[in-house]
Image (tube, rainbow, N blue to C red):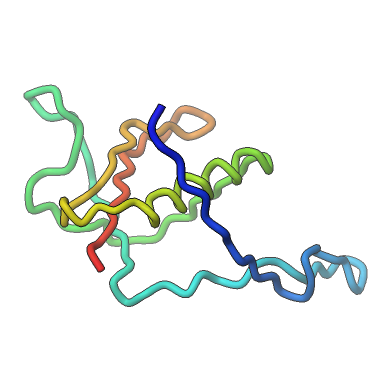
Length: 125
């Protein structure tokens, strides 16, 4: 196992640290939207199996034009683990690699019908 780093995190909530139903059928509360920099972004590229056996987009492919809805669900433990992962990326000193990224290949949807190659990139400061 590698080394560990303890990070203190301040959390913000909307209207208290619990979601409430007030009035009946109306739920209030949650977490503020993240305040991302203008450098944060994403794209969705069409991907296919290539003759050489790799899976990925064609070189120079344009991002997908259209809309998607992506639902993410899990237990509290799942979200803690996801948070630990994202915080670790944030705290990682990647200054030696200005193109630092990690691949999560063939992430599958719960029903197995959708396959994603998720690439997490950390931009230099």
